[in-house]
Each structure stands twice: as structure tokens, then as C-alpha cells.
View (cartoon, rainbow, N blue to C red):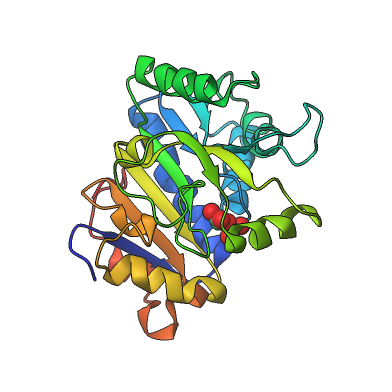
Length: 256
Ligand code: PGA
């Protein structure tokens, strides 16, 4: 495996959600005013549901956390149900009782929306924790291949793979362009959890884990002490799916 990457192998999506929620909760206990970048997509949904259960049960308080949306389709009408921000509202902000958030502005000027987004993140002192999914083509947010480490927050053209995988969320086509947090924003996060689940991610996950880092697989540019890849047995293949206890080699905050 690539040096500088921590892999936490879990048996299944439910175990992945429990471990991710444990790691996020530990980070919030250490810093209640955490700034958290959150992906949509199917993989992190059980994690958000588990966090919601804990908030509901009163064992976790996220009320001082600021949530930052990762990306948004370009050109949707304000009430379009395919909005990724609306998905974030439904799956994260509402159930987790989040009070502060940063999103891409809906003004007609995408360049200005990107500049304002970056400025708001900078004013918060950067991203403390990024919750990320792995695109079937290795993308992070809509940093489609090729995206280098210095790719800024910008308007991106979606690749055919992303158009197909995103169509599956809505049962219809999605816009071909989107606003995305830059690789600059994502790679500057103090901690990042890359959540990976399912056999269909096995090939791309192995390119992330084994390297070499390349803009052709933007997620392979993740690395460093704050980055953990949480992957289930289906994504890793049987030989890599050791019990999580055999893999944990760090403290409880996930910043191994
Ligand atoms: P998924 O999407 O979690 O629905 O697999 C990941 C992504 O495309 O970033």
C-alpha cells in the first residue's frame, strides 16, 4: 500500500458507517466548532443516518459544527429535486441539527460563486474534516480525471462515468456541468475520511491504495497523516478485509 495512507478495513457498509460515525464523533468532541466538508452520493448515507441516530438519542451534539457542501450541479432551477445542496439538507443538515453551513451560492455568476465559497472556507480557517466518497472514475467531488493537486474550486465538466452514476440517483439525466470544491480545498483538509463500499469500486480503490498518485485518479492524490480510507470487504476483496481491530493503528481521533 502507498505510504502515508491509513486503511481501515471493515466487513460491510453498516460497520463502515459505525466506524466513520465513531471517528467523526471523536473529532467533534475534540473540536465542537469543527468545519466539515460533506459529500453526497450513496456511500456516506448510512454514516449520516448513524450520526443522526446519535444526535436523536442525545449522545452526540453537532450544533456547533459548520457543514460545507462539496459540489453542486450547474444550471438547475431553484426547486429542482436533483440539487445536491437539497440532498445535503435532507441527509445531513436537517437530521444532524446543523445550524451553520456553507454552500455554493445560487447567483448567476459561477466564477463569483466559487470565489465566495473559497472565501467563506478561508474565513472559517479551512476544512477540519472532509467526508468523501470515491467516484467510479476516481473523482473527488467533481474533480474529474485529470485533476491535479492544484485544481481550484471551479466549474467542471462531468465525465461520461459520472453522468451515468449520477443518473442512477435521480432516474434521469443530470446537468453536464457542476461546481466543485477544488482539489486545493480537499487536500488542505486537516483530516479526511474516504468512504468506499461495494465490489464495483474494487478496481478504482486499488489504484487509490497502491498508487502511484496521479491526476488521472484524483483520489490517489490524498495522503498524509490525517487521511484514512475506510473500505468494506466488497470493495477490498476478501484477502484485504481483515477485522478492523487488526488494522487500527492509531488513536481514537482517526488522525493516524
Ligand atoms: P457513491 O458516489 O457514493 O454514490 O458511489 C461516489 C462519488 O461519485 O463520488
